[in-house]
Amino acid sequence: MSRALQLDNVSAFYGSSQILHSLTLTVEQGTVACLLGLNGMGKTTTLRTVMGLVDRIEGRLLLNGRELEGTTCQRARMGVTLVPEDRKVFANLTVQENMEVAERRSGKSTDFTVQDATRLFPRLQERLGQKAGTLSGGEQQMLVVARAMLANPDYMLLDEPTEGLAPNYVEAIKESIVAARERNIGVVLVEQSLPLALAVGDTFHVMENGHIVYSGSRDEVLADTVAFEKKLTVE
Amino acid sequence: MKAEPATLNAHNIGAPATRRSSFLTAAALVVLIGAATPLWTQDMPFVLILASHAIIAALVAVSLDMLTGNTGLLSFGHAGWYGFGSYVAGLSAQLLTTEILALVLLTVLATALLALAVGSILVRQLGKAFAILTLAFSQVLYAMVFIASGVTGGEDGLQGIPVATVLGLQIARPEVWYWVLYGTLVAVLCLALWLRRSPLGKAWLGIRENAERAQFIGLDVFRLKLLAYVISASLAAFAGALFVLVNGATTPETLHWFESGKILMYVVLGGVGTIVGPAIGAAVFTFAEHYVSSFTDAWLIYFGALFVVTVIVAPGGIFGLLRPVWARCTGRSERGAA
Image (cartoon, rainbow over all chains, first blue to last red):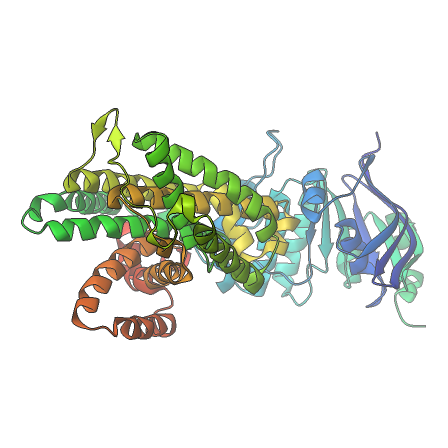
């Protein structure tokens, strides 16, 4: 059975507006796929499509060979979680409670636990008893990434997780993406920061007007970064 | 950023074991003082009866808090379940058995089934729509009492409910009822607090905070809300069953929206989402209602004003005002108290 998240000829609609056009994308488990492109090109919609948050979908979505369908919650339980752009922690709960809400163990020894989360983000260890709404933006972002990992998913969808963060927090998020890959979690990373994408990505996909106009491996991109950067700028 | 994690416990923020045991001792003392009420009210039987009614009010307040405090669903018609429970238990006592355990079990079961059916529709609604629909449902139940007056007694309600029994022994004395109710309240509070700290309770809090984000991490918002609704309705009906057995009668007023308003006020006065707070709010309200209404017919105006003042000045209610003391006793950081 293929251990991958697959979008097979997927089109997505909001009302009568078609946002994604026959998108085909495969993300192997334990790899990081970066979705790049200008604003409004359909990157976020791609993630929302996977989670069943668009009005209508055509084509097939497969998760490890199984049809990915049902409500957002059912999809999350099948093994895919989304960390949206706007952080939205559970503001009135403590950091520890935020993590405990999300923790879902499969019983395997490799399960990501609250203890693992505080090891990955030591800053959160210092804030365990603090209400999440009082954390700084960077700390909140760490918390939502930790929360997503605590659901022990096979795949994690990250929508611009470092947007507006200070460099030390960007570094922490980068480490968490690497840690996720090491735990055999497949990551779809929507990112504006090319340096971050290049630091963690295995495959790179450039989107334009709801289409994937370029797909390449890390080696292919690194072979000619100047040409790749050109694809991400307005002609 | 690279600090080695310390012991993983949110409660270790200034929470020495001695402080915790002092708190437990104080809590045990409060429970014992409450249990001793019949001993110092021997010359004031009415106070004991009022205290029993305050406990029933506390139970129904906790039941609403199980819904509103845990999931954020605001019910304007909670008295519907309270009254429903009183009628089911009352009718069952008249027609089937006087055994209290059988009566409450029957009431809770019947309520859970109806709440499951009604809740499946209601909890899909959000915010105001849910609140209005709960009000509408309770008024339907209220109307049913009059439509089926041959069974329910119509405006007169159910009168002459037989005295409840435990294994054939009658529970007739007020102090015995008080101890039964008091023990029940303590057990329900412990259960509710345990539930709050359980993974289920944490999941409820997650959906209360942000239902969409909760779905992203795999929480089934619909089922969790439905479960909270069923538990809350069943507990309210349980309180209603105890009411009719203590009181020996029930009337349509138990289902009326005015009663729902009172239950909501218990919760707001005590502190939404604090479990213990609504129980305190209900007790304070019940005693204040009796004594203030004996001085003036305009007591509702004072209570309305109290409600407004509470919402504006102390949105956390009585428990919110006591929270610093509570935090100090339990050793919990105030920032960390959810």
